[in-house]
Length: 176
Image: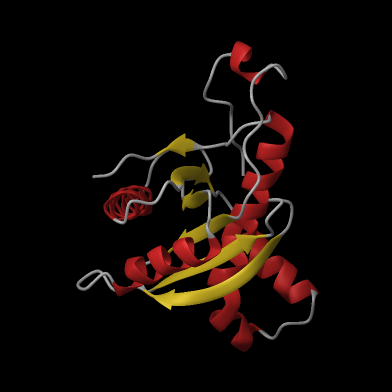
């Protein structure tokens, strides 16, 4: 996963305000499932939360995300942006953009102040599967946990960039 700063060098100076502490969420959007991970209140460590069944018709997965955002008082949500290895967009890339836009709209409608960002997630699922295999998780069990593990990878990447850059990484998403 590679993310490049999207602002000029002046925006990276240590003189700017540091991002506020608080819980951050990582979301891995798939066609059938949505993996979710959350950070601690200091935004240092990512842990798996749950896997939601994707529900494009009734948006029950997005409704559950709004509940979790509210309950955890999340400051930011990082939605994984699946790009090809070369960095070009794929069909899944647009699906993730659409999902992030819908989520931002529901956050706005719920009058929450949580920000949504798209974050490069190249190889997050591959990395999660490799780590699960290395820790002895059987491939049969991986299917039920891979989405959460990928969300942990996305969130860990975002938290590392946030710590390094002193600001929220990724591309901000507006309501659609």
